[in-house]
Length: 459
Ligand code: ARG
Image 1 (cartoon, rainbow, N blue to C red):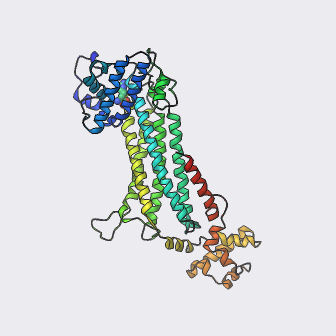
Image 2 (cartoon, protein in one colour):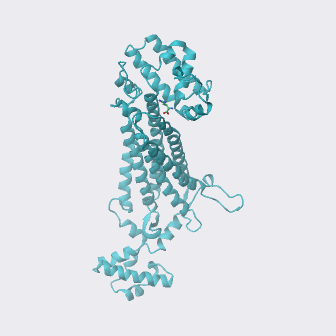
């Protein structure tokens, strides 16, 4: 059963086998393992290391195994150490002698390095298209909510008025960077380790450029020791996944706040909410909370991977087998979070009246009142002090700046005239902000056009 049994005189202890085996999780990349083997065998035949006849048998055998696994006719069982051993054993069982030639000029070290790269490369594409789906949803929401005014916050205190589109746009930026990070990782990792052997290459005349090309890589890796020992790209991916999870978590935190009885800025759809077993009135934002919660798990994978790698001498060591479960889990977790978050956003109701009322009631136009004074010749520091007095006056009376009479304004500063009301209206406060990146509609529309073009250009 073991690929390496020849040198041993005793059976492996069962607990050792269980502890050492990776088949329970590395079966996840059976598809990529077979894809890599097919490329390897084609190259061996091209180089005259294998006969055409053996190549045909092996390739057909491998394709048959893949098909049967997909159909569920063939089932992966636990007695094999890993997916590589399983495939080779089944192949030899099915096609005889030729199966034993599959592993010529290859080690499981370069094989597993290849499989993991092929697997993560495919997953990066899926992650990227999930982030793209989210970006499209956010873009749609931005276009629909260009004139929905709401308070912008600093220190979770109302600061200045913005629009819902502008707030969503901040997250658009974050997820757009996340997507470009995924693309960067793919570009940097896309070199093929196959042909590096155990650590020192092989004596066979392998054509590594050919296998790299067959498998869609930009070329072969250039150092056989690094090839079998490099897991940097996984660390980069886990870091990018952690950043995506962090961004999702921040947005979820805001949605949870916005969904409270106190804020009522949004209502999460019934289909994305859950209830309480005891309190009949409850409708809880569990999905947003779970996405926020799962962030810890993704960070955990990153820290585990960094820690696992920090003490490993060159080249391959079995510690590296630990890369799989945590990477798979982090990928699956973030994929789930992205899909759920996008669904939650697309079904959520935004309570526009509540957002606007909140922006009106929190002195978010105080800076604009000060700017009004500055435009009438008052030094900014003095203007700041005058508006401070206005705010104090309003707090005592329980009113907004917009509700003060002109006499009341003039009692604090004679500079104020009738046009102060227009100057501090929500609409003016927002729409006057037209520099690129600001919330005014004019600026936002330009930015949305840039986003659309960028999204079209990327696959
Ligand atoms: N299951 C192993 C891993 O994931 C495959 C490589 C085994 N190589 C070895 N020299 N024992 O890393």
